[in-house]
Amino acid sequence: MVVGGIPFLIIFVKTCRAKDWRKLKRVIAYPAIGVVVLLGLGRFTDHLAYRRDLEGIYDTKVAMPRAIFEYDSERGFQGDGYSFAVYPLPDSIRKRFEEAGHRPFRGAPELPSSRDHWKAQPWREAPFDPVWVVHLDFALSRLDAGKEPRLEPHFANLRTALGRKRTWYAFFYHDHGDYPGNIDFFAVDLESGRLYQINHNT
Image: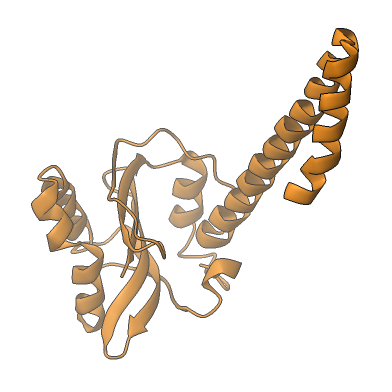
């Protein structure tokens, strides 16, 4: 990028010395427009990838609504941190999960490419399997609940939902030895019309 900027600086200096102000405007404008276009393309590409990931997770097309509640901790250099979000349940996801009894999930949730070294637990209906309670406790971070008291009521609602039928859950995980170290946890609560998404990285 530095090498690419040298010709621009040479042209910029020559144009200033020649006092060709019309040309100077073009010299400045064209690179600026190029940067804006590249940034826009990058964001658009990221958005498409995000939409594909959601479709792979929920086995249907998804348009995410505005969150009811969101919490995001500060992130470390390698992305360590905690995020928790509750959304109104989108109609497309409700329809897909209400059909789960006669249209099983095949391959969902799909691991995103960024999680290719993680493992996946497939969608299943609650009550929650106690075999995975350590991973659930890790997903519902006590440390972050201590920092943000508003998390606790949502944790309680999710635990209640995971104790009854008509709630579905799945997760991706990558353990540190015998203990959870990273998790993406998803829950679809058909009864209360809520969608939960959690990420905890350490």
